[in-house]
Image (cartoon, rainbow, N blue to C red; front, side, top):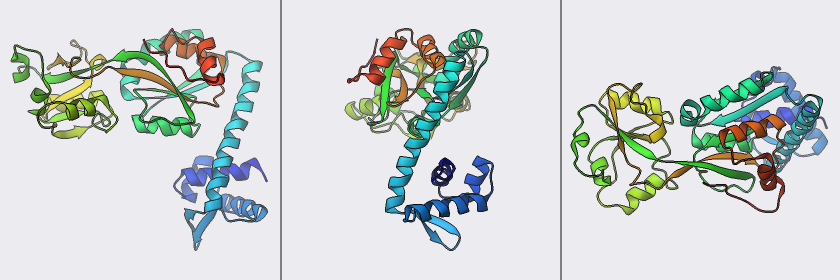
Length: 316
């Protein structure tokens, strides 16, 4: 059994059983992948995949167990490689972080600037993604950690470190009727207009969904969702509806033609969070990036979560 065979089998699984896409991702040939997977199956004595002709159409029951184990093995191998790299040179390497569009656009630029000045030889990769996609990227070991809003659901393989609170505002065009209210905004005011908001905002787990479910009146009519606040604001400016975004995503000077109305009294605060695997191995500069993002997250506190026997939530 070879690591290459495990890597090929796992990549086919990740590419929705498409050998062509797996070959492209691994910079190799389709016949080579097929041959190596066949050799692995022969050695194990069980098929990993169900085939129809030359096509792979499903994963077998023993295949799921083997693939889950193979993913863990490949992650551990990657950690071993990174341990060697870190001890060889503490200031050279790469750091890959998945994050939401809002964090990438409005929070991380200052962090990235400071980090790049401190670690000029570290290659930093930022992958904007939806909240749901963040979780999967971390689970798959494709990123070192993720930065997002509140975790969609608890996962036994993940830790979350809550960093700082943020809330939401309504975005409207100049001269919109909601700007003339002589009282605080209410949920019924929002429901009176077509709404444009984040793709996760009205999912069952979200604070926004809970607020509308517990409030008076009808839920809002959602006409467009997007993970990107810039898309939301552009469509508000085009007259499609009013927007519900993170308060931090609005700048009066930059967002000409739009106005912001506070909705912080209508929704519970959300928390920016760092999400990482419980078996994560972090280079020294990864700890530094987290500390730049949230100064309360010192290396000792993070390691107490990763390697201790308890979960801790560092909310402030």
